[in-house]
Amino acid sequence: LTLSSSSFRISTGPMFLSYSIAQISPCLYLCSGNAASNRHMVYSRAVTCVVNATMEIPNANWPDIDYVKVPVPDLPHAPLSLYFDSVADRIHQTGKKNGRTLVHCVAGVSRSASLCIAYLMKYHRLSLLDAHEWVKSRRPVVRPNVGFWRQLIEYERKLFGKNTVKMVPSPIGLVPDVYEKETRGLVPLWNLR
Image (spheres, rainbow, N blue to C red):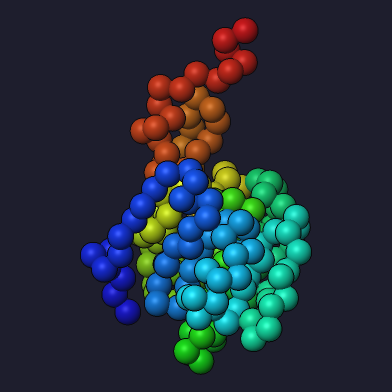
């Protein structure tokens, strides 16, 4: 499968993104908890499986939709990587049955984006760098926390034996090199006191 952004239109803005559902692949969608709780939006995309990557939001449990709970907090030390394979496998299996999976967390920024990136690496053989760029092009607000980046880097090494993203020092601590330019001019708040 080749992913192409030419067939999609991206609209941005905080309000739009909070209530929008981004299509990541023909069988995968990504959104916030707000969008995932909009029954019309979910059913209009023929979603058959919802991955709820939160501890905070209960499953909607609507008819004809399977629910998978990933009860992990959005904290750098949270073990999200324990779910990379099982969620990627579920998305893949759902797609093979002509179903569609919607992955959400609270904001659709960190946990759910990380799970979508892991799926693209495992089943579309995209590098971490390319998978992140693709997901970010579909949903510009995505920004996995630093701990999830470390877990994704480790997962990429496990899958491919090499890495396309590395952690680098910045004024705010270690960050993935994809954020290096934007953090270069930052000064830690504690230096301003």
